[in-house]
Image (spheres, rainbow, N blue to C red):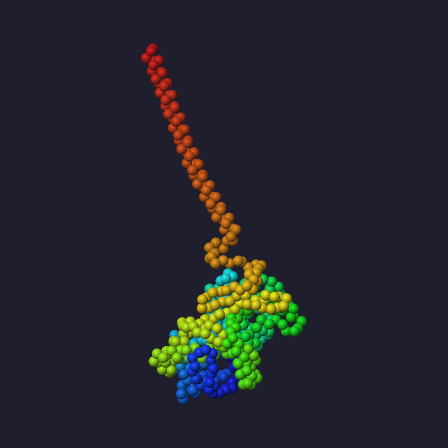
Length: 456
């Protein structure tokens, strides 16, 4: 994660890097951490330019570094730079490869979920620190990708008091609430929603937790205070979208080694170093990907300084990473696999993965723990369907009545038309018959009169 408050720079030379089951290459790495990414890049350019830049992960620092690197023909692989703006690789970000799924890739999960459950509206609630803006960029991906849905946004200031009343006032004309903020604020909002009886199925709540880190709401309801019981019940309505975790022996070994390395390095201020998050995993896979692309390029006669060629060979390919298969799309962005978690045991307050979304195939997979009732909206919300509404605002019963009435009216008009036509024909025939009879009778009378006169 990006933490602007750390401005010191560490420089170490790593003489050997060990990979699992991949081509062996010896790299010399000079890490520069926390701040000054652009100035460090400029300083390095005065001497020998690097063959590869790993990172930065922070959006604002990454933007400047990637622009320069693209101009200098240096590949950049980052486990960050996840904002929507980096998706445009045509010019200034042409050499950027994102080894971690971007926020737009995460938003594909929400699109799949919304389409599956036929939801149409959402409120995006995010904490905005006006500096690194992690949550802003996270939900920006959702807002960008789901433009066809009815989406509203609500920003929560990091400095101001959390106004839960105002937040909940804004959800009344929506179906889904998607949140990104610290765990304490998530809990506060869910408790307020529970007190207002908004957690009884009238709304669906989501929390985005991608990085397994404390600065993001981690779905934890327990604090050891008097509100724990209410929080547990409130969190029964809170679902979590997170990265899909694959358990492999290699990854377990890697995690153990990383924890030992962190302890040995003495990073006492590293709050989230107890677990291997997607950044650590991503940079490991970044070196694997670069080694594969470099090996191919040099085998085909290209120099290791040909950044464009090496970059292109990292895109649109699949390889085996430390935690599982890694799929890169044609734009140099990793296809994301995400999990949907829900509280499956309300008494214990425990969560399980109930569905998975696989970005490469764009498939949404329901798992045995999935409960359809949990995701069914109740109360005032209308049930949406995949078929566009062409009823001009009429309800189903009203529309049916109009159609039936129109059919009956048409049938009556047709029946009246044929009845009137048959009646007219009958009258005309009867009139004609009477006229014929009258003519014959008159003719008989005239013949009779003539015969009487002749006899006389």
